[in-house]
Image (cartoon, rainbow, N blue to C red; front, side, top):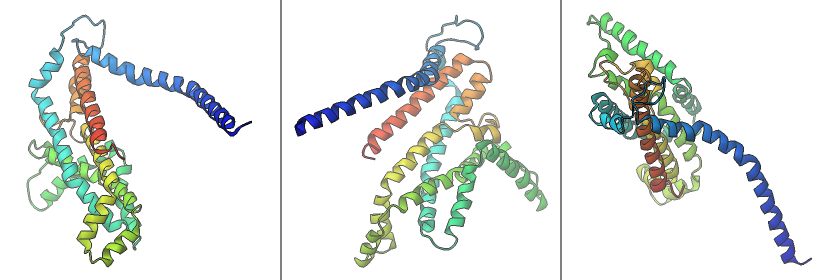
Length: 297
């Protein structure tokens, strides 16, 4: 048998093996994905064209009215603005602070592992548990401290002007450790000889950070921003535990708006329209970001 024949036979065997694997494993996964993802998305898009409470038949077709009403719904607009503020705070404060702490704690110096654990612990806690803890602190303990110093009782989460600021503080506290650990993992992959070479060339600490650390962390920073963007758009659990969207609907996000004004009020058609808008927004951000910023990662 010639070498060419042997190689051809080997390729043919590998092709049949791969085809068998696809035929065995793809159909079950495709069925599950279709039942639990594709069909619900299609149903939600269809329900969005009706005024429906989730019971009975779909018989009140209203076209795009559910979608158009979102453009003039003040609560939804405020919810969308709140999501934008979460993105701004996450990208502008949380991620830079997490990067700074990662640089400080990346080396195996005394106490570094302990501080990593302390900063990462909030991320391990469930969102609802964190929300309940902080609700007690901001509206209970904080008010008690003010009264102890002779002031009037003050409940931050009941103040329409400052309630969402409290939510942003909790978000930073909760997810800061997750991004810090991502950056630490990235820092540990950078070749230490690059820092030594930069130091020999006379680069100071800032120059080493700018020209060695940041380029070396490029892919991890892009991944962190990706998680932050999608997480900010899907933020829900902690809103329920902290404020339930109050006071006066000032702290809703788009997902909590969907829950309280759609499902909670038995406006399934309207809620489905909100869900479709959210899906399109999240999918556009996810695929657009990966296409533009993560195409080489």
